[in-house]
Length: 545
Image 1 (cartoon, one colour):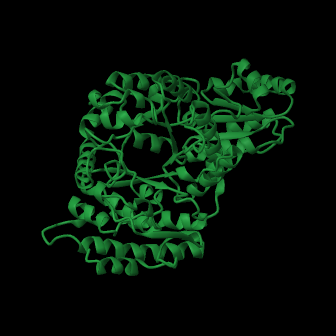
Image 2 (cartoon, rainbow, N blue to C red; image 1 turned 30 degrees about the vertical axis):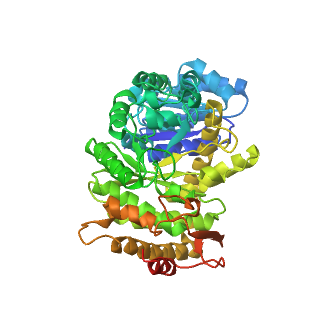
């Protein structure tokens, strides 16, 4: 095991940065020796000899002029160790760090502005300052493992023009703000990419960047080839799914596929397919990506939550998502878990719902099916006031860190007002990083709250009732109701899976009522009183579903 010795030299007693650096070093596999504050240069050098150090960390955070003198003297005294292969790193305030850089002695200089992954890269043997693609893993799972214990960061981005989107991607990449840029493409591209005759010029740029050719995607990908070389991904579209998948892999090296089970079709007005046919198409997409060992995300649960479905349906859809992914050959499954959905859910009940989702899908994990946790803030939960929205972003991500996500999908604080610009995303990333850093330093275990655990157990019990009802509506000829498109369609049309926003929808039941009660979203009767799944589904059975 390699050894790093570190401390604050001279009269400097500020060691928070040293402690943080050594904590990262431990996570990167180093043996650490902390010498504390106000260490003399001679003592630091002697400790490095005694401990047979491979790396020496030096910190100073006081007067730049004094610091420059101390560091110069230290460099002269420590040069013998440097000649023997020992590396040296400095950390301090920007003015002192600037002077430390001019000495030419230190292998790396940090002033507090560098992202955590730069420090981890250095500790893992990469040279800081080299912006090379090989320094940043270009496959999702590799990137997750490389960045642990920190989650990789993702955000949607797409401006109404190619030029603005290209420029923004460059800025985001150069700022090293994200690991994944999810291209927000306009609705016409999602549905009519291969059908220019169906495209409406008046709708160009509505909802995102108007990509119209593979070359457009290649252009956007090239914009990301700088900074920390973020991965790209895009919507899976609402038609021509396999053709789009083939094009994405060739043009943007797509990080992962995101596809629902029940949505992006005529039911929600976002695609040309009916419900049952779209389910078949989505399953084909899962299988296509699974065969190529590309991760797949089923962004299913939050679509129900955003339509005010009760928490139990959120949990049931999380199970169906993971179950379908495994059944259709996905090896790396990304479980998207949207917090704050629907708005009004309390943090405690929100956490309980997410824990129930994880509890119900984790038994599906096996050697050829790995589950990666992705969290995000509820899109509809942001207040319009920007200061309040910033606070909400940080608080939500801090709560999300309770489940130790592998991916944090940042939803920018400006989303209630406008689609995020590059500057907005960079700012949101900084806020997210601080919330994540605070949590990783030692977050209290909120999962042990008795009210949270009680709600988890209640949701799991209720989910079993709902899943049993879905199984029982299948015909006798159906081998597996949970992946049968006809059975899944009937689960929606019958009202077993339902949401208030589906009222008067020709593909859904749309009669369920819900209400936030004690922080949880529950199904209620006509009097507003909560009802169990057994009661709710029993009433549906009486309607001869």
